[in-house]
Image (cartoon, rainbow, N blue to C red; front, side, top):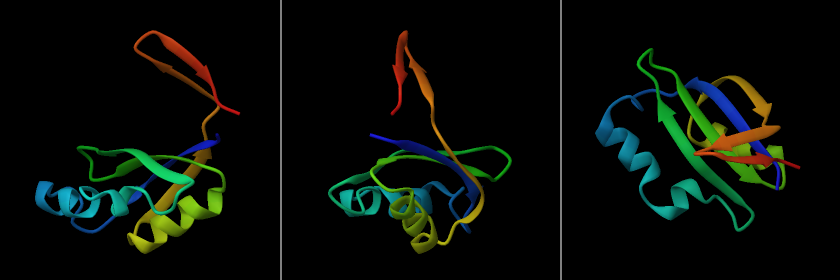
Length: 90
């Protein structure tokens, strides 16, 4: 399943309470049955990084828009290394 990484900003998301409110419940990170926001990082410089696994990039873009992100970039992920495992994403 394709994956994408987005970098951007969203008002208030660097506050742990707001961050939790936006992401805690499954309906916040699972916009539909075929799309999951798998990871979101809040960086020290105020930017956010989100990873999405899904069928359509447009579904990720819609989620970012619904969450009021100002997106700097969205890139498709080609390879992942995680604790010694290497995955090729297709």
